[in-house]
Image (cartoon, one colour):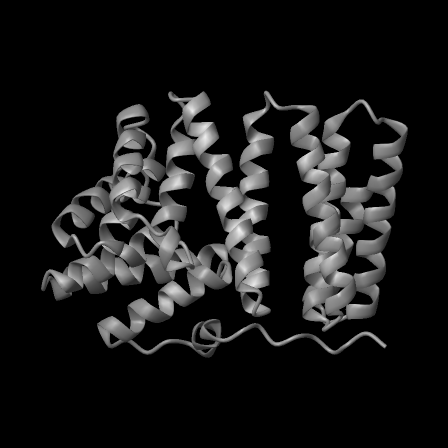
Length: 286
């Protein structure tokens, strides 16, 4: 039932019906909270509370209801922390928590709360480092930490040398997973190591050409930096085709496409250009 309300809310968002979307999100959260109370020994239900509170909080943030949104996002984070405390041997819960710390840090940074943002980012970093230490043979832990260290929004937390070590280890552990080579290519790209980035990204798309638009966009920019203009345009077209087939993706992917278009001298669509700005809120709910 909760899933049905979530899907209904997402439909209302797409069709510009914010009041109905808010009501559906609230129904989803209420059901999840009731299930978490009735089945208190199941951490999965508290995970659902965290997810639904996070969705409603993000929605209200776009509606300019900042105070309630922040309370809900705090509730979501605390719920996920409790899930991890109740099931410390479930690494997937801890990875989810690390990602939520990053998202919370992003929101705090945008609100001008740099100190709070740094603390949240540091918690994410510590969570991923613990996962790498406790599960040294699991590639995804290395990939997620490498991506964060390569793209950390705060300069003091960025560490390309450590990110390279982690991403390289991921390719050792999972050489047949395109995500490992994608991550390594992204890290090399962030460090302006164009030859190494090209090798890694080409391996990524060779293993699975439908890996996603991000790998093709990074490859296009890398090829352009190396002077291979024709190959860059071909890779860019692959990315555009993927995005048109699978949807424009999240704001990060749209922003990456805008960056690639600017570098290659291609015309970006209005939707892509808008990715450089915060998404405009829908009409505020009365």
